[in-house]
Length: 195
Image (cartoon, rainbow, N blue to C red; front, side, top):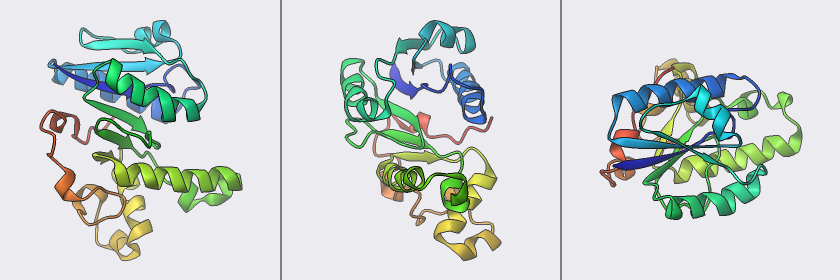
């Protein structure tokens, strides 16, 4: 069985669109793909189990609340020790990936509306999200609106031509097409699920 690690640190936090999306997508994917074990990592696995459960959903505790040790140390460790075939994160992925990564970018408000973010956070997100997307095996934008916003940032004329992230293989926010399908065990994870 394939094992997909899911960064669910947002599952038991404040209610927001990204955790609703994650719950719906993982619940749907787990039903559709019984040959994959979805290993969900959260700060409170017992509560997360009540929110998201199924025969092929496994819950594990995240030992670090701080993002830096989680990204730099825990995820590479978990990929090896827990036998993950791939890791799904939101916005930011570990820079030292030992397995393919799937990055979900819900929006790019830090680019389109920088006034909503303190300067340090804005620059941190710009750097880390771009790096994560560049190194990802697959990138998921949960809506056509987000896809188009991401595409218009890199190719301003594409917003008027209906070009989107998933259709634009030369788009800098998307990995090169040669990286798709290089690991057949990961291909089933690379579907654009919509909540």
